[in-house]
Length: 339
Picture 1: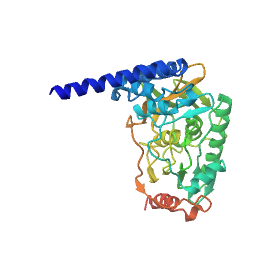
Picture 2: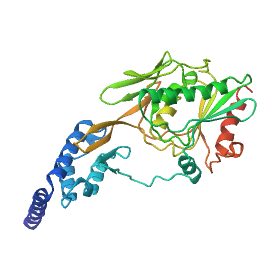
Picture 3: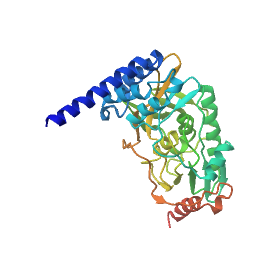
């Protein structure tokens, strides 16, 4: 027993000594950044209660012991994100970004090619009864820019809804990895309808509301003057997702949960379902931190990736939609309604 107690004390003293050395060696700028980040995470991280903050801070200081600047403290900063299992958020310093990635983010070559080409909105008629609408990621910007993106999507939807024989719509979110959710949601107003379509839940709940051709998240975020308006809230919609559907792309998918005549087809989404909030850390540092989760129009909160109702795997064929297994399954579901 005495030997075990002596060993424990020896190890404890060794650790204390190492921590003291690390704090003495670390640059003031790096220490300040770690202190600030830890303090913020303790208050705002969605997983704050799951971390031992005394241990987390000690470990971060040890990892940053020889860092002269935050540029050299990447291991410590990524460790801080890992301590709250935040793989959606990012710490920025100058021109560098530090993320925690628990596993490689693997997407198919076909999806990566669409990203590289910066593929835009695409519309098509798969046959005389089934329409196709692809909604890609949208870049955040000024209200004027968001309004422009929303009206572009709304106009694309209008062209499809103008077909007299239209029985349903395939909504393709496979290349939607996130970005600005406001124009995505408002641009699909005719499908989603008016009122509450979802919410962000942090310390409080902020509702996603479409009203009078405007999207509100506490305040008016974007607005449009539609070139057409058709109430298509009961039109059958097959939402196609894949593992690259992430972040705001997943939030957009959530707005269709609880909607009538809707089915999800394809693969499980990326799982980047946390609500992200931005905070300044220092003069040159900033953090996007996961601070909560989001819910659909029924109030159901999503803490994990969205799973399809009809699971379809296999290669994506964006250049030949009629040969794409996911699109074919989605169109088949629409065609089968009412039989």
